[in-house]
Image 1 (cartoon, rainbow, N blue to C red):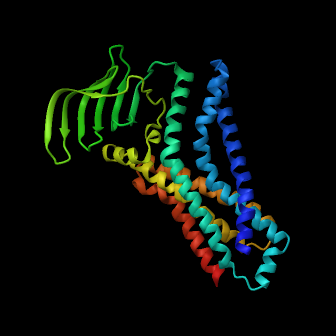
Image 2 (cartoon, one colour):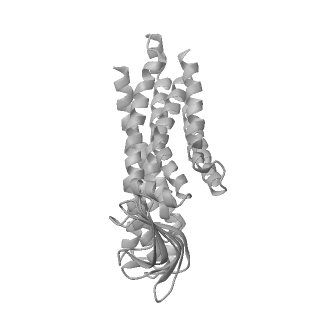
Image 3 (cartoon, rainbow, N blue to C red):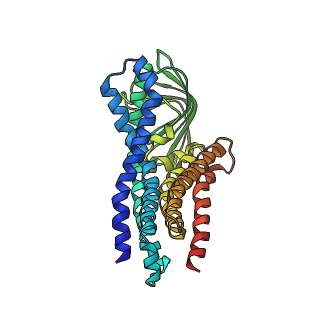
Length: 337
């Protein structure tokens, strides 16, 4: 009975928490782009598209942080009104309140993985396209580095460098994985209207057979918009991300972070409920909200910097979850004594 009561109150506040964090992140986005939007006299339709296409990204952050907010605010009210103390006095052990929060964390982690693996990549690609149009217009501008594309049904395309050229963008360091698993590689090529033309290309079949071709066209959509930022791998759906990681080792961190971000909801829910059940004063709950969110954000940012300098490789993506899971396990043992 008390478990259902905890879930009901938490879910009510969870919606509020998600809206609060999404509102804050959207405001931050608009403030960071406001100078460019005003200078370029950007139409309102483009501004609205930027906001809408950014929503899955903000939702990916709001889903786990909203859990911390809702759980600790709920327990804060219980502490303030002595409901938690009455439950303990009535013989209800703290462990009986752990599993509802963990169950909620599992469900949210599942939703977060679906958002991270399928919804967010598509939205990120569209966001990049609109942002690119706002900044540079419709033409390719400047040299693009380490770009990964996944046109639907055509496999994964990777280029180390893409140089603008009126006769067709020049490609360097090309790798392509066909849907069947065959891998093409070439030092140079051209990005033409409806294809990538690979020069002196090698094809490695799944069975290991190697074929060399002097000029090989590979189909590529004529209207496929190139990503304008360094977030190329972030626009790949989870299955394509697995394939891209085979071609480009730098993508492995993005792949690991996709899973780590989703699991973060469960880890944060676990630590939040442990902290909340360990408190004796309601005021500490709000301090706990700030401390948990800030600490996780610091570790999340640090893990990206470690990956940038190739410290721990893709395993660094799990740093926030490992630290918080260790704290939650330690707190659970103390709580159950």
